Amino acid sequence: MTQMTLSSFAERARVWRLLTQVTWQSFLKWLHGGPLFRWRPFSGSPQRLLIAPQDLRTSDGTNAADIYSGRFLFAGQLAEARGRSPFEIDPPSADWARALHGFGWLRHLKAAETVVARQNARALVDDWIRHCGYWHEIGWDQTVVTRRVLAWLSQSPLILDGCDREFYRRFLRSLARQVRYLRRTINETPDGVPRLGAAIAVAAATVSMSGQGRYVRQSLRRLDQELARQILPDGGHVSRNPGALLDILVDLLPVRQALTVQGLPSSQTVMQAIDRMMPMVRFFRHTDGAFAHFNGMGSTPADLVATILAYDDARGSPPGNAPHSGYQRISAGDSVVLFETGRPPPVDLSQSAHAGCLSFELSSRRSRIIVNCGVSNTERGAWRTVARSTPAHSTATLNDTSSARFLAATSYGGWLGSPILAGPTHVPVEREEGEGGLRVVASHNGYQDTHHVVHQRDLTLSRDGSVLDGIDRFMPTGKTPRKDAFAIRFHLHPAIKASPVRSGTAILLMAPDGEAWEFVAPGCETTIEESIYLSDTYGHRRTEQIVIHGRLAHRREAAWQLRRTATGKTARRRVSDGPASEDLDL
Image (cartoon, rainbow, N blue to C red; front, side, top):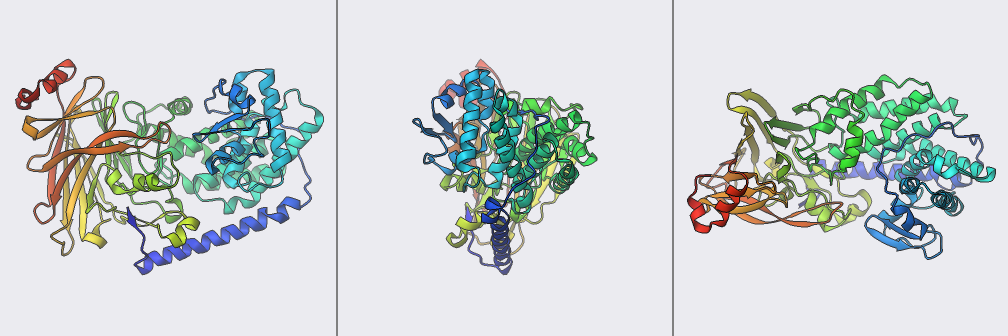
Protein backbone atom coordinates (compact mmCIF):
# COMPACT_ATOMS: atom_id res chain seq x y z
CA MET A 1 0.00 0.00 0.00
CA THR A 2 1.17 3.49 -0.79
CA GLN A 3 1.54 5.30 2.53
CA MET A 4 0.57 8.91 2.85
CA THR A 5 3.51 11.31 3.06
CA LEU A 6 1.38 14.44 2.67
CA SER A 7 3.51 15.52 -0.26
CA SER A 8 1.00 17.76 -2.04
CA PHE A 9 -0.87 20.80 -0.90
CA ALA A 10 -4.22 19.21 -1.83
CA GLU A 11 -3.51 16.14 0.29
CA ARG A 12 -2.41 18.23 3.27
CA ALA A 13 -5.57 20.31 2.90
CA ARG A 14 -7.73 17.17 2.98
CA VAL A 15 -6.01 15.98 6.14
CA TRP A 16 -6.47 19.30 7.91
CA ARG A 17 -10.09 19.51 6.84
CA LEU A 18 -10.72 15.99 8.13
CA LEU A 19 -8.82 16.70 11.34
CA THR A 20 -10.85 19.87 11.94
CA GLN A 21 -14.10 18.04 11.24
CA VAL A 22 -13.30 15.14 13.56
CA THR A 23 -12.18 17.47 16.35
CA TRP A 24 -15.33 19.57 16.06
CA GLN A 25 -17.56 16.50 16.00
CA SER A 26 -15.81 15.10 19.08
CA PHE A 27 -16.37 18.37 20.93
CA LEU A 28 -20.05 18.46 19.98
CA LYS A 29 -20.46 14.82 20.98
CA TRP A 30 -18.94 15.60 24.39
CA LEU A 31 -21.14 18.68 24.71
CA HIS A 32 -24.36 16.88 23.76
CA GLY A 33 -23.66 13.51 25.30
CA GLY A 34 -21.05 14.13 27.98
CA PRO A 35 -21.50 15.02 31.63
CA LEU A 36 -24.26 17.54 30.87
CA PHE A 37 -26.30 14.78 29.26
CA ARG A 38 -25.51 12.17 31.90
CA TRP A 39 -26.74 14.17 34.84
CA ARG A 40 -29.44 16.33 33.26
CA PRO A 41 -32.88 15.56 34.75
CA PHE A 42 -34.82 13.37 32.35
CA SER A 43 -38.57 13.43 31.98
CA GLY A 44 -41.05 12.35 29.35
CA SER A 45 -40.50 8.60 29.62
CA PRO A 46 -43.04 6.70 27.48
CA GLN A 47 -45.75 4.77 29.29
CA ARG A 48 -45.62 1.66 27.15
CA LEU A 49 -44.36 0.05 23.97
CA LEU A 50 -46.92 -0.16 21.20
CA ILE A 51 -45.21 -2.58 18.81
CA ALA A 52 -41.97 -4.52 18.42
CA PRO A 53 -40.29 -4.21 14.99
CA GLN A 54 -39.26 -7.54 13.54
CA ASP A 55 -35.64 -8.70 13.73
CA LEU A 56 -34.68 -10.13 10.33
CA ARG A 57 -31.31 -11.50 11.42
CA THR A 58 -30.90 -15.24 11.82
CA SER A 59 -30.82 -16.61 15.35
CA ASP A 60 -29.45 -19.80 16.88
CA GLY A 61 -31.10 -21.07 20.06
CA THR A 62 -28.12 -23.29 20.90
CA ASN A 63 -26.14 -20.17 21.85
CA ALA A 64 -28.58 -19.45 24.67
CA ALA A 65 -27.04 -22.16 26.87
CA ASP A 66 -23.58 -20.57 26.62
CA ILE A 67 -24.95 -17.14 27.50
CA TYR A 68 -26.88 -18.55 30.45
CA SER A 69 -23.71 -20.25 31.75
CA GLY A 70 -21.76 -16.98 31.50
CA ARG A 71 -19.79 -17.80 28.35
CA PHE A 72 -19.84 -14.93 25.86
CA LEU A 73 -18.34 -15.58 22.44
CA PHE A 74 -18.24 -12.38 20.37
CA ALA A 75 -15.97 -11.16 17.57
CA GLY A 76 -14.14 -14.50 17.62
CA GLN A 77 -13.15 -14.15 21.29
CA LEU A 78 -14.50 -15.92 24.36
CA ALA A 79 -14.86 -14.40 27.82
CA GLU A 80 -16.33 -16.08 30.90
CA ALA A 81 -18.20 -14.04 33.50
CA ARG A 82 -17.67 -16.64 36.28
CA GLY A 83 -20.72 -15.54 38.24
CA ARG A 84 -20.19 -11.82 37.65
CA SER A 85 -22.04 -9.49 35.36
CA PRO A 86 -20.43 -9.47 31.88
CA PHE A 87 -20.55 -5.67 32.07
CA GLU A 88 -18.13 -5.73 35.01
CA ILE A 89 -15.39 -7.92 33.55
CA ASP A 90 -12.46 -6.69 31.47
CA PRO A 91 -13.35 -7.19 27.79
CA PRO A 92 -10.81 -9.15 25.70
CA SER A 93 -11.10 -6.57 22.90
CA ALA A 94 -13.00 -3.47 21.89
CA ASP A 95 -14.84 -5.43 19.20
CA TRP A 96 -15.99 -7.93 21.82
CA ALA A 97 -17.21 -5.11 24.06
CA ARG A 98 -19.11 -3.49 21.19
CA ALA A 99 -20.88 -6.76 20.46
CA LEU A 100 -21.73 -7.25 24.14
CA HIS A 101 -23.14 -3.74 24.60
CA GLY A 102 -24.96 -3.93 21.26
CA PHE A 103 -27.24 -6.74 22.55
CA GLY A 104 -27.66 -8.32 19.12
CA TRP A 105 -27.22 -11.67 20.88
CA LEU A 106 -30.67 -11.31 22.49
CA ARG A 107 -32.14 -12.92 19.39
CA HIS A 108 -30.41 -16.19 20.29
CA LEU A 109 -32.10 -16.17 23.69
CA LYS A 110 -35.43 -15.57 22.00
CA ALA A 111 -34.84 -18.52 19.68
CA ALA A 112 -34.41 -20.80 22.71
CA GLU A 113 -38.08 -20.20 23.63
CA THR A 114 -37.64 -21.10 27.29
CA VAL A 115 -38.59 -19.43 30.56
CA VAL A 116 -34.95 -19.51 31.62
CA ALA A 117 -33.88 -17.66 28.45
CA ARG A 118 -36.48 -14.94 29.07
CA GLN A 119 -35.37 -14.50 32.66
CA ASN A 120 -31.71 -14.44 31.61
CA ALA A 121 -32.40 -11.78 28.96
CA ARG A 122 -34.23 -9.61 31.47
CA ALA A 123 -31.47 -10.00 34.07
CA LEU A 124 -28.74 -9.02 31.59
CA VAL A 125 -30.68 -5.98 30.40
CA ASP A 126 -31.20 -4.94 34.02
CA ASP A 127 -27.46 -5.42 34.66
CA TRP A 128 -26.63 -3.07 31.81
CA ILE A 129 -29.07 -0.43 33.06
CA ARG A 130 -27.56 -0.66 36.54
CA HIS A 131 -23.87 -0.61 35.52
CA CYS A 132 -23.87 1.35 32.25
CA GLY A 133 -27.21 3.10 32.06
CA TYR A 134 -25.75 6.58 32.57
CA TRP A 135 -22.43 6.22 30.78
CA HIS A 136 -19.90 3.78 29.41
CA GLU A 137 -17.09 4.64 27.04
CA ILE A 138 -17.93 1.88 24.55
CA GLY A 139 -21.54 1.25 25.49
CA TRP A 140 -22.50 4.84 24.67
CA ASP A 141 -20.73 5.03 21.33
CA GLN A 142 -23.40 6.05 18.81
CA THR A 143 -23.04 2.95 16.64
CA VAL A 144 -23.35 0.71 19.71
CA VAL A 145 -26.36 2.65 21.01
CA THR A 146 -27.97 2.25 17.59
CA ARG A 147 -27.56 -1.52 17.68
CA ARG A 148 -28.82 -1.71 21.28
CA VAL A 149 -31.93 0.39 20.65
CA LEU A 150 -32.91 -1.75 17.68
CA ALA A 151 -32.18 -4.95 19.61
CA TRP A 152 -34.18 -3.88 22.67
CA LEU A 153 -37.12 -2.84 20.52
CA SER A 154 -37.23 -6.01 18.44
CA GLN A 155 -36.69 -8.29 21.45
CA SER A 156 -38.96 -6.37 23.83
CA PRO A 157 -41.52 -9.24 23.99
CA LEU A 158 -38.73 -11.51 25.25
CA ILE A 159 -37.42 -8.95 27.75
CA LEU A 160 -40.77 -7.74 29.11
CA ASP A 161 -42.78 -10.96 29.20
CA GLY A 162 -43.66 -11.62 32.85
CA CYS A 163 -41.66 -8.67 34.23
CA ASP A 164 -42.80 -6.53 37.16
CA ARG A 165 -43.96 -2.94 36.84
CA GLU A 166 -40.73 -1.45 38.22
CA PHE A 167 -38.55 -3.20 35.64
CA TYR A 168 -40.95 -2.17 32.87
CA ARG A 169 -40.53 1.46 33.89
CA ARG A 170 -36.73 1.19 34.17
CA PHE A 171 -36.54 -0.42 30.76
CA LEU A 172 -38.67 2.24 29.02
CA ARG A 173 -36.88 5.05 30.81
CA SER A 174 -33.46 3.73 29.74
CA LEU A 175 -34.66 3.11 26.18
CA ALA A 176 -36.05 6.65 25.91
CA ARG A 177 -32.80 8.05 27.29
CA GLN A 178 -30.78 6.24 24.62
CA VAL A 179 -33.11 7.40 21.86
CA ARG A 180 -32.77 10.98 23.07
CA TYR A 181 -28.98 10.58 23.03
CA LEU A 182 -29.08 9.40 19.40
CA ARG A 183 -31.37 12.26 18.48
CA ARG A 184 -29.05 14.82 20.06
CA THR A 185 -25.79 13.40 18.66
CA ILE A 186 -26.86 12.17 15.22
CA ASN A 187 -24.95 14.95 13.45
CA GLU A 188 -21.76 13.86 15.27
CA THR A 189 -22.28 10.18 14.37
CA PRO A 190 -19.73 9.03 11.76
CA ASP A 191 -21.10 9.64 8.29
CA GLY A 192 -22.37 6.82 6.13
CA VAL A 193 -24.07 3.68 7.40
CA PRO A 194 -23.57 4.58 11.12
CA ARG A 195 -25.46 7.88 10.73
CA LEU A 196 -28.18 6.32 8.60
CA GLY A 197 -28.46 3.50 11.14
CA ALA A 198 -28.96 6.04 13.92
CA ALA A 199 -31.74 7.71 11.90
CA ILE A 200 -33.39 4.30 11.40
CA ALA A 201 -33.15 3.49 15.13
CA VAL A 202 -34.70 6.83 16.15
CA ALA A 203 -37.50 6.40 13.62
CA ALA A 204 -38.18 2.84 14.79
CA ALA A 205 -38.28 3.96 18.44
CA THR A 206 -40.61 6.91 17.91
CA VAL A 207 -43.03 4.71 15.96
CA SER A 208 -42.88 1.91 18.56
CA MET A 209 -43.18 3.90 21.82
CA SER A 210 -46.22 5.74 23.11
CA GLY A 211 -46.26 9.50 23.63
CA GLN A 212 -43.83 10.22 20.77
CA GLY A 213 -46.26 12.00 18.49
CA ARG A 214 -44.25 15.21 18.35
CA TYR A 215 -41.11 13.33 17.36
CA VAL A 216 -42.54 11.01 14.70
CA ARG A 217 -42.63 13.53 11.88
CA GLN A 218 -39.19 14.90 12.82
CA SER A 219 -37.57 11.45 12.95
CA LEU A 220 -39.14 10.31 9.68
CA ARG A 221 -38.04 13.53 7.97
CA ARG A 222 -34.46 12.97 9.13
CA LEU A 223 -34.60 9.39 7.87
CA ASP A 224 -35.73 10.66 4.48
CA GLN A 225 -32.87 13.14 4.39
CA GLU A 226 -30.23 10.48 5.11
CA LEU A 227 -31.69 8.05 2.57
CA ALA A 228 -31.83 10.74 -0.11
CA ARG A 229 -28.22 11.72 0.62
CA GLN A 230 -26.69 8.25 0.94
CA ILE A 231 -28.59 6.02 -1.51
CA LEU A 232 -27.41 6.73 -5.05
CA PRO A 233 -29.78 6.92 -8.05
CA ASP A 234 -28.76 3.41 -9.18
CA GLY A 235 -29.41 1.96 -5.71
CA GLY A 236 -25.85 1.67 -4.46
CA HIS A 237 -24.53 3.26 -1.28
CA VAL A 238 -22.34 6.34 -1.35
CA SER A 239 -19.53 4.40 0.41
CA ARG A 240 -19.43 1.95 -2.57
CA ASN A 241 -19.42 -0.98 -0.14
CA PRO A 242 -21.87 -3.66 -1.36
CA GLY A 243 -22.35 -4.86 2.22
CA ALA A 244 -23.79 -1.47 3.20
CA LEU A 245 -26.97 -2.36 1.31
CA LEU A 246 -27.51 -5.41 3.53
CA ASP A 247 -26.83 -3.45 6.73
CA ILE A 248 -29.35 -0.78 5.71
CA LEU A 249 -32.12 -3.01 4.37
CA VAL A 250 -32.10 -5.41 7.34
CA ASP A 251 -32.99 -2.47 9.62
CA LEU A 252 -35.06 -0.38 7.21
CA LEU A 253 -37.50 -3.08 6.12
CA PRO A 254 -38.84 -3.64 9.68
CA VAL A 255 -39.35 0.14 10.05
CA ARG A 256 -41.47 0.17 6.90
CA GLN A 257 -43.43 -2.76 8.33
CA ALA A 258 -43.87 -0.99 11.68
CA LEU A 259 -45.23 2.11 9.96
CA THR A 260 -47.80 -0.03 8.16
CA VAL A 261 -48.86 -1.69 11.43
CA GLN A 262 -49.29 1.73 13.05
CA GLY A 263 -51.35 2.96 10.13
CA LEU A 264 -48.70 5.49 9.12
CA PRO A 265 -47.78 5.75 5.43
CA SER A 266 -44.19 5.16 4.43
CA SER A 267 -42.74 8.17 2.66
CA GLN A 268 -41.97 8.12 -1.03
CA THR A 269 -38.29 8.49 -0.17
CA VAL A 270 -38.28 5.29 1.92
CA MET A 271 -40.22 3.32 -0.70
CA GLN A 272 -38.05 4.53 -3.57
CA ALA A 273 -34.82 3.86 -1.67
CA ILE A 274 -35.88 0.27 -0.98
CA ASP A 275 -37.00 -0.21 -4.58
CA ARG A 276 -33.60 1.01 -5.82
CA MET A 277 -31.52 -1.04 -3.37
CA MET A 278 -33.23 -4.39 -3.99
CA PRO A 279 -31.97 -4.81 -7.59
CA MET A 280 -28.48 -3.83 -6.45
CA VAL A 281 -28.49 -6.68 -3.94
CA ARG A 282 -28.93 -9.00 -6.91
CA PHE A 283 -26.36 -7.00 -8.91
CA PHE A 284 -23.47 -7.86 -6.58
CA ARG A 285 -24.24 -11.58 -6.34
CA HIS A 286 -22.15 -14.20 -8.08
CA THR A 287 -23.56 -17.38 -9.57
CA ASP A 288 -23.12 -19.15 -6.20
CA GLY A 289 -25.01 -16.36 -4.38
CA ALA A 290 -21.94 -14.79 -2.76
CA PHE A 291 -21.24 -11.07 -3.00
CA ALA A 292 -18.18 -9.78 -4.82
CA HIS A 293 -15.29 -8.57 -2.63
CA PHE A 294 -15.25 -4.87 -3.36
CA ASN A 295 -14.53 -1.92 -1.04
CA GLY A 296 -14.89 -3.62 2.32
CA MET A 297 -17.38 -6.39 1.51
CA GLY A 298 -16.50 -9.49 3.51
CA SER A 299 -18.07 -12.92 3.72
CA THR A 300 -21.65 -13.05 2.47
CA PRO A 301 -24.34 -13.79 5.09
CA ALA A 302 -26.35 -16.05 2.77
CA ASP A 303 -29.25 -16.42 5.17
CA LEU A 304 -29.58 -12.65 5.53
CA VAL A 305 -29.45 -12.11 1.77
CA ALA A 306 -32.20 -14.70 1.27
CA THR A 307 -34.36 -13.02 3.91
CA ILE A 308 -33.92 -9.59 2.35
CA LEU A 309 -34.65 -10.83 -1.17
CA ALA A 310 -37.88 -12.40 0.10
CA TYR A 311 -39.13 -8.81 0.51
CA ASP A 312 -38.37 -8.00 -3.12
CA ASP A 313 -41.76 -7.90 -4.83
CA ALA A 314 -40.38 -7.19 -8.30
CA ARG A 315 -37.84 -10.05 -8.34
CA GLY A 316 -36.43 -8.71 -11.58
CA SER A 317 -33.08 -9.32 -13.21
CA PRO A 318 -30.16 -7.33 -11.82
CA PRO A 319 -29.09 -4.29 -13.83
CA GLY A 320 -25.92 -4.49 -15.88
CA ASN A 321 -24.74 -0.93 -15.44
CA ALA A 322 -24.42 0.90 -12.10
CA PRO A 323 -22.74 4.14 -13.20
CA HIS A 324 -23.33 6.10 -9.98
CA SER A 325 -21.98 3.31 -7.78
CA GLY A 326 -19.09 2.67 -10.17
CA TYR A 327 -19.62 -0.99 -11.10
CA GLN A 328 -20.40 -3.04 -14.18
CA ARG A 329 -22.04 -6.46 -14.33
CA ILE A 330 -21.41 -8.59 -17.43
CA SER A 331 -23.41 -11.80 -17.58
CA ALA A 332 -23.99 -14.37 -20.28
CA GLY A 333 -24.87 -18.03 -20.15
CA ASP A 334 -23.67 -19.44 -16.83
CA SER A 335 -20.98 -16.79 -16.29
CA VAL A 336 -20.93 -13.51 -14.41
CA VAL A 337 -18.20 -10.85 -14.41
CA LEU A 338 -18.35 -8.05 -11.83
CA PHE A 339 -16.12 -5.11 -12.74
CA GLU A 340 -15.07 -2.23 -10.44
CA THR A 341 -15.14 1.00 -12.46
CA GLY A 342 -15.51 3.83 -9.96
CA ARG A 343 -13.56 6.50 -8.14
CA PRO A 344 -12.87 6.22 -4.40
CA PRO A 345 -15.73 7.45 -2.20
CA PRO A 346 -15.46 10.82 -0.44
CA VAL A 347 -12.71 11.04 2.18
CA ASP A 348 -15.24 10.96 5.05
CA LEU A 349 -16.63 7.65 3.78
CA SER A 350 -13.43 5.92 2.68
CA GLN A 351 -12.27 4.31 5.93
CA SER A 352 -13.09 0.85 4.54
CA ALA A 353 -12.66 1.60 0.83
CA HIS A 354 -10.09 -0.32 -1.22
CA ALA A 355 -7.65 0.64 -3.96
CA GLY A 356 -9.19 -1.85 -6.38
CA CYS A 357 -10.14 0.26 -9.38
CA LEU A 358 -10.54 -1.90 -12.55
CA SER A 359 -10.42 -5.14 -10.56
CA PHE A 360 -12.88 -7.86 -11.57
CA GLU A 361 -14.30 -11.13 -10.31
CA LEU A 362 -15.50 -14.06 -12.43
CA SER A 363 -17.92 -16.82 -11.47
CA SER A 364 -19.39 -19.66 -13.48
CA ARG A 365 -22.21 -22.00 -12.56
CA ARG A 366 -21.73 -22.70 -8.84
CA SER A 367 -18.08 -21.66 -8.57
CA ARG A 368 -16.19 -18.42 -8.17
CA ILE A 369 -13.06 -18.54 -10.34
CA ILE A 370 -11.32 -15.14 -10.13
CA VAL A 371 -11.76 -13.12 -6.93
CA ASN A 372 -10.25 -10.31 -4.91
CA CYS A 373 -8.50 -11.26 -1.68
CA GLY A 374 -11.41 -10.19 0.53
CA VAL A 375 -11.50 -8.68 4.00
CA SER A 376 -9.65 -9.78 7.11
CA ASN A 377 -11.42 -10.42 10.40
CA THR A 378 -8.76 -8.24 12.00
CA GLU A 379 -10.28 -4.77 11.92
CA ARG A 380 -6.92 -3.08 12.37
CA GLY A 381 -3.37 -4.05 11.64
CA ALA A 382 -1.26 -5.41 8.83
CA TRP A 383 -3.87 -7.67 7.24
CA ARG A 384 -6.37 -4.85 6.97
CA THR A 385 -3.69 -2.80 5.21
CA VAL A 386 -2.91 -5.67 2.83
CA ALA A 387 -6.57 -6.28 2.03
CA ARG A 388 -7.09 -2.67 0.95
CA SER A 389 -4.04 -2.46 -1.31
CA THR A 390 -4.17 -2.80 -5.09
CA PRO A 391 -2.02 -6.00 -5.20
CA ALA A 392 -4.78 -7.75 -3.19
CA HIS A 393 -7.15 -7.25 -6.13
CA SER A 394 -7.45 -8.87 -9.52
CA THR A 395 -6.15 -5.93 -11.50
CA ALA A 396 -2.85 -4.39 -12.62
CA THR A 397 -0.24 -2.72 -10.42
CA LEU A 398 2.83 -0.66 -11.22
CA ASN A 399 5.94 -1.38 -9.16
CA ASP A 400 3.67 -3.17 -6.64
CA THR A 401 2.19 0.15 -5.49
CA SER A 402 -1.47 1.00 -4.98
CA SER A 403 -3.53 3.14 -7.33
CA ALA A 404 -4.84 5.07 -4.30
CA ARG A 405 -2.99 6.73 -1.42
CA PHE A 406 -4.05 6.09 2.16
CA LEU A 407 -3.47 8.17 5.24
CA ALA A 408 -1.08 6.04 7.25
CA ALA A 409 1.04 8.71 8.93
CA THR A 410 1.55 7.83 12.60
CA SER A 411 0.82 11.42 13.57
CA TYR A 412 -2.78 11.13 12.40
CA GLY A 413 -3.60 7.44 11.92
CA GLY A 414 -4.78 6.81 15.47
CA TRP A 415 -7.08 9.82 15.36
CA LEU A 416 -8.32 9.89 11.77
CA GLY A 417 -8.02 6.24 10.78
CA SER A 418 -6.82 5.41 7.27
CA PRO A 419 -9.04 7.12 4.70
CA ILE A 420 -8.17 7.41 1.01
CA LEU A 421 -6.71 10.85 0.34
CA ALA A 422 -5.79 10.47 -3.32
CA GLY A 423 -6.73 8.06 -6.08
CA PRO A 424 -8.32 7.82 -9.49
CA THR A 425 -10.23 10.98 -10.33
CA HIS A 426 -11.24 10.10 -13.88
CA VAL A 427 -12.68 6.64 -14.68
CA PRO A 428 -14.40 6.75 -18.10
CA VAL A 429 -16.45 3.67 -19.00
CA GLU A 430 -17.77 2.46 -22.35
CA ARG A 431 -20.20 -0.43 -22.62
CA GLU A 432 -21.35 -1.97 -25.88
CA GLU A 433 -22.96 -5.16 -27.09
CA GLY A 434 -21.86 -6.60 -30.40
CA GLU A 435 -21.69 -9.87 -32.29
CA GLY A 436 -18.72 -11.00 -30.25
CA GLY A 437 -20.49 -10.47 -26.95
CA LEU A 438 -20.76 -7.80 -24.29
CA ARG A 439 -17.74 -5.49 -24.06
CA VAL A 440 -16.80 -2.99 -21.33
CA VAL A 441 -13.77 -0.71 -21.62
CA ALA A 442 -12.68 1.41 -18.65
CA SER A 443 -9.56 3.28 -17.59
CA HIS A 444 -8.29 5.14 -14.53
CA ASN A 445 -5.64 7.77 -13.85
CA GLY A 446 -4.60 6.56 -10.41
CA TYR A 447 -1.00 6.09 -11.59
CA GLN A 448 -0.80 9.27 -13.64
CA ASP A 449 0.82 11.48 -11.00
CA THR A 450 3.30 8.88 -9.77
CA HIS A 451 4.12 6.92 -12.95
CA HIS A 452 2.69 9.06 -15.80
CA VAL A 453 0.58 6.12 -16.93
CA VAL A 454 -3.15 5.56 -17.44
CA HIS A 455 -4.31 1.97 -16.99
CA GLN A 456 -7.04 0.77 -19.36
CA ARG A 457 -8.82 -2.57 -19.12
CA ASP A 458 -10.87 -4.01 -21.98
CA LEU A 459 -13.17 -6.96 -21.11
CA THR A 460 -15.39 -8.92 -23.53
CA LEU A 461 -17.60 -11.81 -22.44
CA SER A 462 -18.86 -14.02 -25.27
CA ARG A 463 -22.57 -14.44 -25.83
CA ASP A 464 -22.60 -17.95 -24.38
CA GLY A 465 -20.42 -16.94 -21.40
CA SER A 466 -17.69 -19.45 -22.23
CA VAL A 467 -14.90 -16.99 -23.15
CA LEU A 468 -13.66 -13.88 -21.37
CA ASP A 469 -11.16 -11.85 -23.41
CA GLY A 470 -9.15 -9.15 -21.69
CA ILE A 471 -6.59 -6.55 -22.67
CA ASP A 472 -4.69 -4.42 -20.18
CA ARG A 473 -3.09 -1.33 -21.66
CA PHE A 474 -0.66 1.10 -20.04
CA MET A 475 -0.93 4.39 -21.87
CA PRO A 476 1.85 6.92 -21.14
CA THR A 477 0.93 10.50 -20.32
CA GLY A 478 4.51 11.68 -19.93
CA LYS A 479 8.02 10.33 -19.65
CA THR A 480 7.82 6.85 -18.14
CA PRO A 481 10.87 5.47 -16.33
CA ARG A 482 12.23 2.45 -18.21
CA LYS A 483 12.58 0.49 -14.99
CA ASP A 484 8.83 0.63 -14.21
CA ALA A 485 7.36 -2.88 -14.02
CA PHE A 486 3.75 -3.99 -14.14
CA ALA A 487 2.05 -7.03 -12.67
CA ILE A 488 -1.45 -8.12 -13.68
CA ARG A 489 -2.91 -10.33 -10.97
CA PHE A 490 -5.73 -12.87 -11.10
CA HIS A 491 -6.40 -14.14 -7.58
CA LEU A 492 -8.04 -17.57 -7.53
CA HIS A 493 -10.74 -18.72 -5.15
CA PRO A 494 -9.31 -21.32 -2.71
CA ALA A 495 -11.52 -24.01 -4.22
CA ILE A 496 -9.88 -23.57 -7.64
CA LYS A 497 -6.85 -25.70 -8.48
CA ALA A 498 -4.35 -24.33 -11.01
CA SER A 499 -2.04 -26.49 -13.15
CA PRO A 500 0.28 -25.50 -16.02
CA VAL A 501 -0.47 -27.21 -19.35
CA ARG A 502 0.65 -26.89 -22.98
CA SER A 503 4.33 -26.92 -21.99
CA GLY A 504 3.67 -24.10 -19.55
CA THR A 505 2.03 -21.75 -22.06
CA ALA A 506 -1.43 -22.15 -20.51
CA ILE A 507 -2.90 -22.72 -17.08
CA LEU A 508 -5.81 -25.06 -16.40
CA LEU A 509 -8.20 -24.03 -13.61
CA MET A 510 -10.31 -26.78 -12.07
CA ALA A 511 -13.46 -26.12 -10.03
CA PRO A 512 -14.80 -28.56 -7.41
CA ASP A 513 -17.76 -29.54 -9.62
CA GLY A 514 -15.45 -30.56 -12.45
CA GLU A 515 -15.81 -27.43 -14.53
CA ALA A 516 -12.53 -26.32 -16.11
CA TRP A 517 -11.25 -23.02 -17.49
CA GLU A 518 -8.05 -22.38 -19.40
CA PHE A 519 -6.02 -19.20 -18.99
CA VAL A 520 -3.66 -18.03 -21.73
CA ALA A 521 -1.68 -14.82 -22.24
CA PRO A 522 0.21 -15.20 -25.56
CA GLY A 523 3.71 -13.76 -25.54
CA CYS A 524 3.56 -12.79 -21.84
CA GLU A 525 5.55 -14.03 -18.87
CA THR A 526 2.92 -15.83 -16.78
CA THR A 527 3.48 -17.48 -13.40
CA ILE A 528 1.46 -19.20 -10.69
CA GLU A 529 2.25 -17.66 -7.31
CA GLU A 530 1.02 -17.91 -3.74
CA SER A 531 -1.89 -15.79 -2.59
CA ILE A 532 -4.24 -15.60 0.37
CA TYR A 533 -7.99 -15.48 0.67
CA LEU A 534 -9.08 -13.30 3.58
CA SER A 535 -12.37 -13.94 5.30
CA ASP A 536 -13.92 -12.00 8.16
CA THR A 537 -15.89 -15.10 9.19
CA TYR A 538 -13.89 -18.21 8.30
CA GLY A 539 -10.34 -16.94 8.74
CA HIS A 540 -7.50 -16.86 6.21
CA ARG A 541 -6.96 -19.56 3.60
CA ARG A 542 -4.08 -20.28 1.28
CA THR A 543 -4.77 -19.93 -2.41
CA GLU A 544 -2.94 -19.08 -5.64
CA GLN A 545 -2.82 -16.29 -8.15
CA ILE A 546 -1.91 -16.06 -11.82
CA VAL A 547 0.44 -13.14 -12.47
CA ILE A 548 1.50 -11.60 -15.77
CA HIS A 549 4.81 -9.77 -15.35
CA GLY A 550 6.34 -7.21 -17.65
CA ARG A 551 8.19 -3.92 -17.98
CA LEU A 552 6.78 -0.82 -19.58
CA ALA A 553 10.01 -0.36 -21.51
CA HIS A 554 9.28 -3.60 -23.41
CA ARG A 555 5.50 -3.92 -23.41
CA ARG A 556 2.60 -1.48 -23.04
CA GLU A 557 -0.19 -3.99 -23.61
CA ALA A 558 -1.02 -7.50 -22.40
CA ALA A 559 -3.82 -9.61 -23.91
CA TRP A 560 -5.18 -12.62 -22.05
CA GLN A 561 -8.10 -15.03 -22.25
CA LEU A 562 -10.12 -17.24 -19.92
CA ARG A 563 -11.97 -19.99 -21.77
CA ARG A 564 -14.26 -22.68 -20.44
CA THR A 565 -12.99 -26.04 -21.59
CA ALA A 566 -13.38 -29.74 -20.74
CA THR A 567 -15.34 -30.61 -17.62
CA GLY A 568 -15.71 -33.54 -15.27
CA LYS A 569 -13.39 -36.50 -15.03
CA THR A 570 -11.95 -35.88 -18.52
CA ALA A 571 -10.19 -32.67 -17.47
CA ARG A 572 -8.94 -34.22 -14.23
CA ARG A 573 -7.53 -37.20 -16.11
CA ARG A 574 -5.75 -34.96 -18.61
CA VAL A 575 -4.07 -32.96 -15.88
CA SER A 576 -3.01 -36.08 -13.99
CA ASP A 577 -1.57 -37.73 -17.11
CA GLY A 578 1.63 -35.72 -16.61
CA PRO A 579 3.74 -34.46 -19.51
CA ALA A 580 1.44 -35.94 -22.13
CA SER A 581 -1.37 -33.67 -21.00
CA GLU A 582 0.65 -30.60 -21.95
CA ASP A 583 0.01 -31.20 -25.64
CA LEU A 584 -3.71 -31.84 -25.38
CA ASP A 585 -6.02 -29.47 -27.21
CA LEU A 586 -8.19 -28.34 -24.30
